[in-house]
Length: 468
Ligand SMILES: O=C(O)CCCC[C@@H]1SC[C@@H]2NC(=O)N[C@@H]21
View 1 (spheres, rainbow, N blue to C red):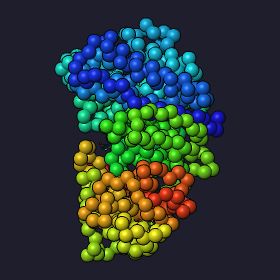
View 2: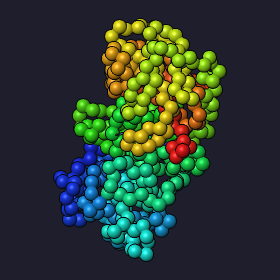
View 3: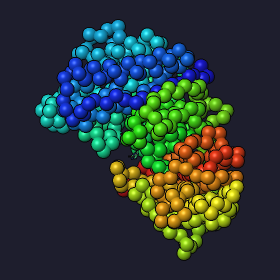
View 4: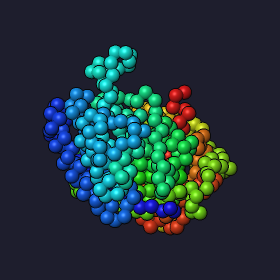
């Protein structure tokens, strides 16, 4: 069919009382059942509203369990989907798997695809030289059940985030896809989104239509807040993207959404209360075939054609999330300005509705390797509001703004084809339908921006440079 209805659930996970202590398998299952009780409510509601598929978050069933031993009682031995198994109707076929059984039944009883994140365990012995000393591999794992409850996908997270010492890396990245009558799906988890494998492979080589993305994402302004970055990835990669985040304001975890290539269809960001939220929206099954599908972009085309930038004595540098940017201030209410760092030249044309005395904006450029909490090579052009009128605060996280723009157009001489366009308004709000990327690489406002701008950014990932 042409469209389908997608659901994502942002879940305020009930955490284990003491994540460092080892509990009995009964206590582990009791906690997982408490979380699954809540997920079941969301799954039922989504199915009632006609959703074909629902995504639930990373760590959504047992929370954050920090040691290898402490997570063990929560894990199940998840078979390869090729075994063709409906745990709901055949629960004893493999070793005890009460969580798989319950998830399978939730999918089957509500006739909806269910995506969940749980832990997989695989025993090994000394015949395998890389077998861990405790005799098992433990994986951060996504599972997908179809609307009859059959296990159709299993994915082991490849890019573990720093603190996930409870899990092992799979030996090779897994590019997991499955077909449905509403399009081809790919799946990966959280930190995977910053790397080429398997995320980019799923889209560029395996041509999936929709990405399923369970996450436990800690927000970092100005570029890596969940709703901002995930919607930008959907636009840059030209896929649908179903992001389900955990909700825990103490950890800065909030921000889920249903994103199409041309913008968010629904999203949720809430740092004020501890409420979860079900989102439901309609999407094109094959977004690339849609007439509204954005064209392929030649990212550096426009910026390479404008005059080169000449270093100016008023340029200055500042840190954004530990990366040293080169900045120049927007001193006039409107104009065209350029800033460079190494090979990256960034160009901005803009017009403010009014130049306020109490707010300062800069144009910034960064071309280099980010090295904190993981290493990845970035090329970034950004228009952003500084925290105060003191230029030394430029780059620090800012959530609110009052300056309205009449228009903006941002471009850069990117060396990579992987550029994610971000527009963030005041109070961490997205701007669906209000901006677009032209095929010459300009990120432009389509209409007069309706809210004050916090940042407009072209976030480029240069995968080939990571290992040089
Ligand atoms: O557990 C994960 O895989 C999610 C981590 C994502 C965190 C994002 S990516 C880098 C940045 N650092 C943070 O603390 N939050 C963001």
